[in-house]
Image 1 (cartoon, rainbow, N blue to C red):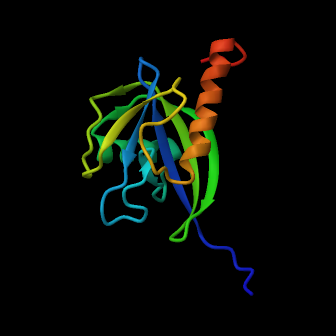
Image 2: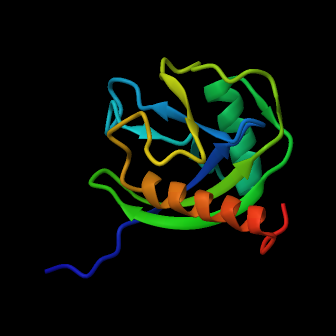
Image 3: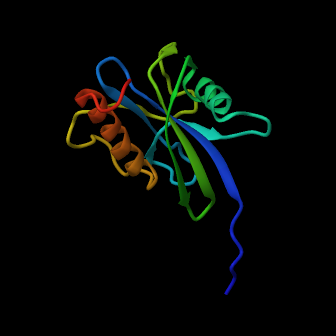
Length: 147
């Protein structure tokens, strides 16, 4: 039995939230691990990049948008069969451009205040992100957290 820890892949993910309190999810395209699963846009952090720089680059490449700011929401680790990832998640509320699936991925807006999503299956790491996002916005509404 091996006690060797797998290499960690650092990932930056962005949860775009629009003025109608909806968040954007993308469907993983054919040919990628977990194809057809729904996730938040983002990708690997390259050498020398901050998490925000990686997120800016990835969202420009994937969605054709320029993000203007972000609020760090959480860091989550998940051990997928193909990679052990540490995902640095930010809430993005300001961007330039209209998100489009530039990598042949379907996109869908989900109601932040809704009880159920309209898409499935979700990547396993996406559910805790959604739960914390909902908690974050609930705390803003009650005044226990500032926006």
